[in-house]
Amino acid sequence: MQIMPNTGPEPRDALRRRIPFLVGTGFFALLALLYLSGATSVYRGILEAWGVDPFAYPFLDTDTVLSAIRCLRAGVDVFAVNPCDPLGRVYDYSPLWLVLRHFPVTLAWLSPVGLAVDSAFLLSLLLLPVGRDRTATGRIVLGMLASSVVYAVERGNNDLVLFALAAVAATLACHSQKLRLVGYAAALLAGLLKYYPMTLLLIVTRERPARFFAVATASVALVILFVATMGHELVRALQLIPTGPYLSAMFGSSTLPSGLGELLGWPAMVSGALRLLLSLGALTIAWVIGTRGWFEADIAALSERERNFLLVGALLVLSCFFTAQNIGYRATHLLLALPTLTALCRIGSRPRLYGWTTGAVLGVLWPQCWRQALDGTTSLTHWSLSDVRIAGWMLREVMWWWAITMLIACVVALLRGSEMGRWVRRAA
Image (tube, rainbow, N blue to C red):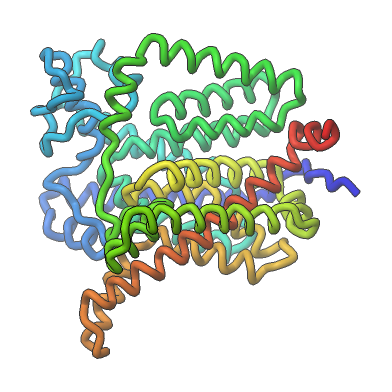
């Protein structure tokens, strides 16, 4: 029997929808007030308690792009050297950001642009699916206040722009054909701005074949145009994508196997084989779960908005997890999928399974805080600080792989249940 997705109205509660936005805005407004009033020691103390190491001033990552624009306008090759950046970081983002060189960017732009980036993120929280009860809303707020999210906001990182674009795409995909096209354009723009979000275009699988192929053809044509006009800068930027230490707060599919390789002295070939084994294992388990009738029925029982946000959130996280090492702030994209996971805890046929998954997502969103808690246990045990940190790192990696496996399963079920997924299955 074919399970048809629920197309009825999503759960509605005006107050619960606003709570994440209001709490987040209030928290960051408090931090801004402390900073602007000169109470920088309190400001820094709060951020450090949250597991965030603040820079001398906010919006350091916003300045990654703006500093490159300033140097570019001065005739500097920012792909080779960037003296305008406070940390001397060369430019390794998409060349599309460099269209800003046509504007008179100065140091005075930093705070307004950083505030605009953070405001876009906070406003996009109003688009998230509403929590189905108080417990779900509490979990969403807990995720929104996580150290990874606070880190991204303090830095004004441009991944927050991608978050907002993904939220717009997921929201507009629930509306008319014209608005859905605007949403697909937002997804494509996110991909052109930072590459890995290009997978967001899989949301177009909700369309019938003719419209799907029309949107796909237009998207491919625009990508080809982008490569043709900015290909040289694109290649240079891709060559500069950084890597970092494996035994750190960074995450990705290479982190666990390569980190174990460093600890145990394995050759790179063994770490590479373990990475492949873990990836194949996650894909296999996810396929088994994602194609089960009970799981597909649980996904189909969600509202359309919940399914869309689950898909875009899962796609963003999976894309960056399997393609690169990622600084902790990028885990913020899990917040897009979190409301739907909390909904599955309530309406799903396996509430314990979804509860564990939600717990894993929250766990990896709060990596620095629980690492600090683990550090504090050294005074109560015979373990050394390094032992406790390694144990915490292992625990975090287990949670990441659990969350990733379940997100793949969700993508499998969502794509199989989409209009194009059903068309492919009938054609096969």
